[in-house]
Length: 205
Image 1 (spheres, rainbow, N blue to C red):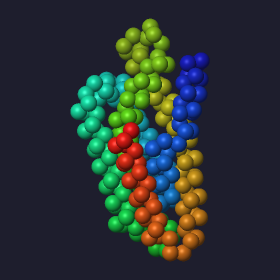
Image 2: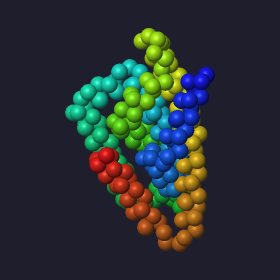
Image 3: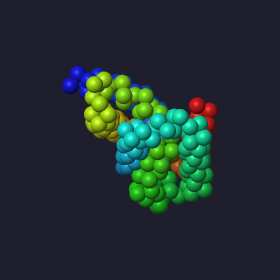
Image 4: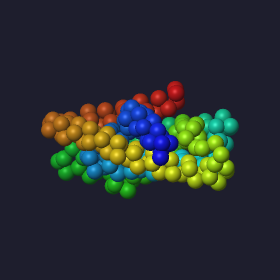
């Protein structure tokens, strides 16, 4: 129990600091509303579950050991963020600011969240380094994997709750901007610009 409490405290401290995932969720919520933000958060954290599975099964270790695999995954993620930026600018009707908009279906919002997170190799390396610190030394291979899965489930639950807060912030921004007439054109470029910034960050980091 002491280990779980320490892990939960460390996880919360990491999650509350706005990072690329939090910014992405706020952006999606600002583009399409609180509900879309929650679905996006669920997609992002489903991607987190995938990374936890990768860490448990040793896939993350392979990515860490192979610069080629790391860069392929990284630039695939960058390419997807660029795709989201272009799609947002060209399809501004998907921005739900009212006035007869045709928002992006929630299943695609969920898919985007999963893909953006799964294609981020830095998340894979994070869990590869973070989870083992809270595994008991004498657990053995199967015991260590079981403990990492439990820790990963705790992280998923905490992240999903805290990500809902980012969705609330983004939804509030959408409501404020929705009251401003003639803002859809500029708003599309602003949302696309955030995706471009996240892509540039992924390349430079």
